[in-house]
Image 1 (cartoon, chains in turn cyan, red):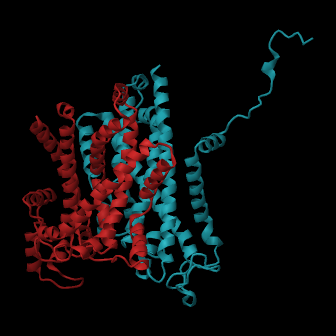
Image 2 (image 1 turned 60 degrees about the vertical axis):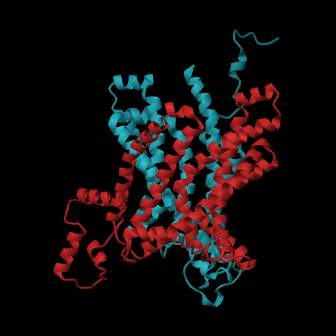
Image 3 (image 1 turned 180 degrees about the vertical axis):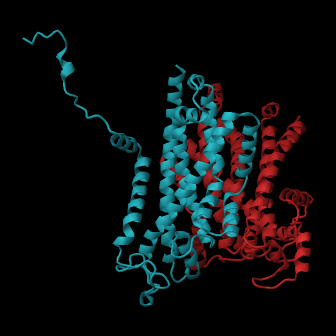
Length: 305
Length: 319
């Protein structure tokens, strides 16, 4: 006979599932999508190797060693050597730093400049909003690379200038995102309630509106990152990138062009590295975007009910 | 009705044109160095007399407030006067027009080839959705977006010019002089441009066709008993046009950058190459002119596309 308790004893069963932490949730999220997995692993590889790699290599980044110049890939120099004898693999690993740092700065700058513009413009509305929109449209009709070229060429290739030049053409994207987010949420009841409570507009924007547009912003950031890396590489290839002691893949390819016939590995490998990291960001961004779509639809219908 | 729409769109353009020209004008202001000295052709350390300096300063209108300078410059631009090139000593407009034709061959040729490849491929990928052909197409799209153009260009040079020796790697021959040579020189650059654009066109065509396939009117047509092939054909004709035109519009701004890079790699004498050279020689008048030209190209093409939409779908006119 069971114990005669007046209640269902099963409520005292220990939980068989462990509570999911944030990490577990992230792993579950990534693991559920093949593209996210592949792209994510690739990205982590790039970042880790980029950080740890240069110190693990026996070769110096910049010191010439004319005895071993222009050697094809071998067991000693896995990706060969360049025209003054530097190990190509070591330089490629070091080059990831410039690409990632410049791209990160540029994307952040675009976000920090574009988001407030879009948010406040649409929140205030009226002529200011129309003005901001026209300006953004104007910027969007600019060929991004050409503008970046002109900016960097005329003002000098400093890190800040590179950030700004690459960021400039992306600013309208974030302005638009924020604008659509603000417009959608502006008339909702909770915003009215917050306003009635006397919360300042900034607080309303940050606390009420922002959390709802995080997802599309994340997608945009990822895809923008890919674009920023590509633009930085193009600028470096055209001779407008950062110079020594910074190493950039674009510059490596530029230097390799004269020796294309005798030493094709000098141009091929940096390009593969570039293609790999851009590919990774693109795959992740695309996968995130596809995930967002049905999700947004379902969350929207939840809200309407 | 069409005229009304066209003029409305034109009027909407004016603030955008103002913004764009302002950006171009003020970007040129950040050029380090003294523009007077640059115009005088004075190298660093060269001595110039006070009178000559002041005269040039007046001539350039630099004594006036910035906004007046901008308006003066703008009025000249609208009349077709882009200034005098510092390096070439002739009208900047002339310099640009000379280089325009090769670039147009590249742009238009590239676009046409891209559309010819990508539209059928996109449609087929949509029809055979989720088969290995579809995956192949999607792979092509992703690669096309990710691989850096200048690197792709170098790889094609490596394969076709260096190893196979079929095509020349640099230069240009006018089609009137030697058509075969013209084709040989333009083959590689145009292929690179075409591949790049094809990736975007394929992606949008495939997406759009997939959506269209599930629309109600398709079901109706099939229910009416129309053959599968007829249904698909009507599809293809109608929305391919719209999609292709849309993509071209979206890609116009990107196209200018693409052309610049491709012309640089192949030493192809178009306006992209001119832009890079002018930047190198600090001829910022030509730089200004080329950038303005590229932007106006984008704006005008997009305007034409908008008008074209109303021709395709008259409902849009009444919005």
